[in-house]
Length: 413
Image (spheres, helix red, strand yellow):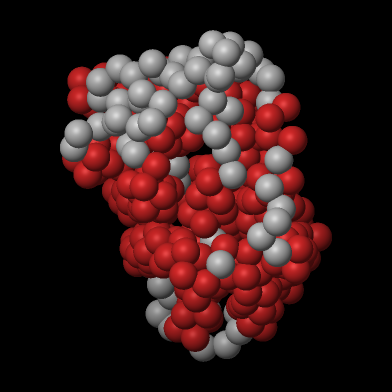
């Protein structure tokens, strides 16, 4: 119990492990579209820009649902919202399996899955925030946020299996079942907790997001997170297709199964990178470390683009390092927003954090798709060169934003 009378979880490690497992399971469908996009894009006669917009639809759904679902955690126990998010993901997957046969049907179904992520990812973090002491929470947040990388990595592995052994319909059905299982886990094993109340007993309206705009420090982390997720999800949405293209330069060409293993391992190492980056921030200063990470990410984007036509394992190795650098500041940016918040307005700050962040993520996929169309298609080296360079713009923006706060010093609140 803290000085304000708030009761915390007696077994925090067990809660953290359980919520991390549920988070990973809930994301099984994450790579469904990135893995099947080339096959379904050809089958449905889509341009690369349309393919990118379907991938972006995931984050459009996320952004639309965020103000109510994430902002609502200041008024409603995040446990309830998490369960609702799992149901949305399950319905989206079922819609993708049963009705998707072109651009709009796939976009809408995929948006429902994205809305489900809005109901699980940050509300899952709020489950942790409401039940752990401030001291344990600072260490726990990077572990929770890194589960996004672990969940997406497992999804790439599972969806790669379905690509070679089954169909997108069966993959979507399995994704729906996984979302239901995650919701059941939260219902059974997480005890209800009343949300924190602002001084004076007032509760903030779930759509009142003004607290996030009153805190310059939080605004800096939120803006940088938007640039970060633009880059991250531009990379994630197109990584399978990119590695298929790079693998085709080998003799013999890399198989889709091997590519799915590579992309899965790549995302898991990204998870470890996120934890390491958060620890660096605690030791050397958050703004300084994130600035340097952004600069390194921009350099790795250039290196990745220029080695695409080199030896295949060199190209894959540099792209792998690029992914590691992209993920270094992921947990650190979210932890920064949490640190800049107060208990009664944390939902508002995290809602804006995810609105801006996944708004950037929604743009990443179609921008890369447009660059591919502009450069001659997904089989063109020039097209992929431009696409990878555009990804790196996210790191440039992160470095600029955080450098300004680094220069301003610790007085910014």
